[in-house]
Length: 623
Image 1 (cartoon, one colour):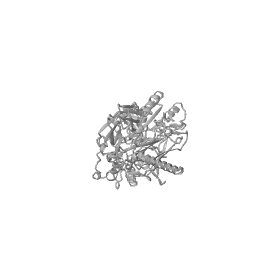
Image 2 (cartoon, helix red, strand yellow; image 1 turned 135 degrees about the vertical axis):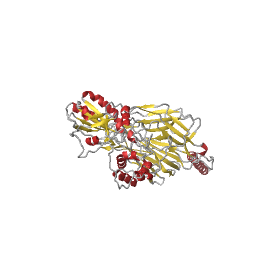
Image 3 (cartoon, one colour; image 1 turned 90 degrees about the vertical axis):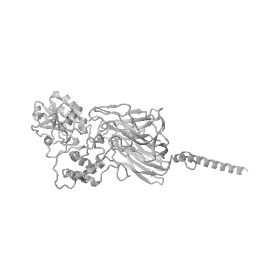
Image 4 (tube, one colour; image 1 turned 120 degrees about the vertical axis):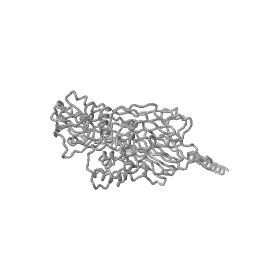
């Protein structure tokens, strides 16, 4: 699977806002005394906090990215309000969360108040809690006075630079001042609290026969130990514990992450589920997610333990680990590395491997000459980027006989976007390289980018259009596209105009998602004849209607940080008629030489002939 500073770019467990039915306990409901064990095995009752004027109950799950992000903030709120008569307690109602995992969660996020275990979900039902993290404030009579989010900084699909409203803190302040709560209910986004269900005895869809193959094909690549997803889906118990989540994210088309319009282009890494597969998942969940006959299970897939590319022949790493803070926005980090190439190197495959997948949102590796302070385009085709990585982006694997060139002495520049996850982390990202024999390289592949370095998006504009183009002088092959924008990005399209004036859309991303920046690899290289013009067309939303807009009042310009913007239309290409294995001669010239030398030479010859003809005509007239 790239994005992402936003963590749920990697998370299929995150879902939409909580909904409240008429039977849900809500504002004004009494929560009677109950007893649960905490993660240390101690019995705790609600009445243990009878001396506290207010009690804040926060439902959590140890694998939920939003719960992780908000854990330090909840701990800080506890320290702020504990001397003013309020107490905090967390409840974990996720069936799969074990006491030791909950204790590690509390320790890593410095939570110094009790976490109670509710595996039978009786207390979650009593509160009407459906997602994590969700907060409830109980008054001195243990009546619910507030329910909802902690603040509005983190949501399912993005994050703000800062919260615009600290809902839980505001509600606590108002209650402590004896005032009515201005907003007693707010929407909660986060991870579903999975409910237990009874299995239908006559279910026709089972995990072993129908669901396991679907998960293997579309999900397990990321949802396995050591990968970017927050939980695994490699066996029945793991899938059954997430059955409602799986059904919901598939239903709303959040997972598997794929944002290209199906009407345009065919892509080798298309992650979409077929309609039949979606229906099978829905039927399985509705039937109580039965396991079925284990003999029908597909054979397990054996994934590489480290690199997905063969080898690699050489690994180049960041100079030293980088420390990622628990919270806040982290500016893009730039690391320059000398790979030690004393001769030109041809790269057939490249894979960027994060040292810590939890915090690496995306990473690009650029090329920089030793006498420059900036990455520059390299080679006759203007290659700008060696490789890119984000959740959903496959490793660079070029066809036989094709490779990218890294000149001798050039450096690698790692540009990494980190996303805090609620606890202190470190990362040391690397890139693995697979070399090609120079004698076997027929075509040089380049990653070119159409940029708008003078991008200017006016304040409050909901649909700002930007277009850039490039005309190919020769027959070319296109292999992949990689559109890149930031938080105001709305849509991105690649289309071409052919020499006969016909047009074709090659890739359309109608709902651009900063969290899932994909590299769209064509199923077959696209041949474009000489004279074809490629257009990149982007739209931006800088209005208040964009919930992830850092500042609708700002005039936004090009910049590295998420609160800046970018117009980057990357594409991978090669000259269709090039063959570097053949000797260069006047009878067999490379396409580039023909385009850069022969065409101008032909023009000069033509001009010389015209000049000679004019001279002859003048001589005749004078004679």
